[in-house]
Length: 390
Ligand SMILES: *Cc1c(COP(=O)(O)O)cnc(C)c1O
Image (cartoon, helix red, strand yellow):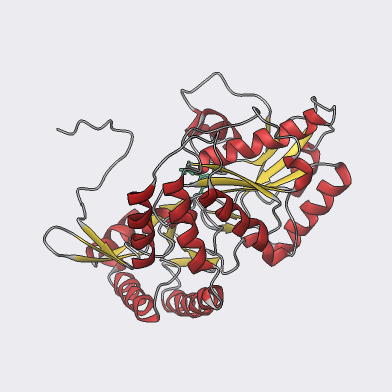
């Protein structure tokens, strides 16, 4: 009997080793891992550069308090501000903490300019921003909130794609609109670029801050460093996490100078956030992702992957409804429940993970090879051929 609580339905499958796109069981059975800890291992398992970085730092210094200057964190923050819209960064340890910090920054900004009543956050119904009490209330998902009352106030919701409701829910109390440009858990639903542009315009007009949750779709996952770059817009606040640490827990909130001014000493903190060990790994990850040609490779692999997936869809039009996604955050939407399909992919040694709306989520490492993509395509085709027998 496991001593772990039952808050996860776990498969009876464990791994002892990982290398790049592959995982190995203790019997040496190899799986092609297109989950990568849910978009976390951006450079695959045990990337040699990351192993080196963590080894080196682990011999020097692991943790000091944020009351001291941490050069490794200065360096990582500088990488983000040099390459993105952001002027400053606060480090955290996870996505939920990053989205919470984003909410805090937005509220504190309006407080600091004498508008403390402008504090409501407008989100998409059934979105995903993490599992803390505030984050589940931000999601507006009945399933996630159930049993965790009282409800945390200050959040409003509109349905994905319902523009009329979206505009109606904006009031002079709206401090920020917080959305995922690509909804990961929600079924790889991409917010069109014209729509993001329009939202930015509305935010400008009504003096509302735009928070774009790039925890899952950021850090090169979409083929751009941030997925919102496709829309050519600038947000005010961006929580990130998953892919930054390549498997080491790191979160962060990126922000403009305008809003960061409100985050004066004492307004926010984190014991672990931004410690030297985490920051060293983060720096090593970013060195790879910011390398010339890295993101264009993500894009070309994505183009190939998506076009081949669409060929499979055309071959099996009664099984696959839609191929979704951008870059290497992809989804195969089925007409029916996807559980058996995912099970069959697993039996054929391909790991994937579900998302809402009957979607099979595919999240290979960003440095996946064409050969590995071809292997996945072969397995997906086989499972489609076997589908009527599932
Ligand atoms: C995973 C995720 C989070 C929460 O991240 P945790 O590290 O699990 O707390 C928040 N927002 C989005 C979009 C995510 O995909």
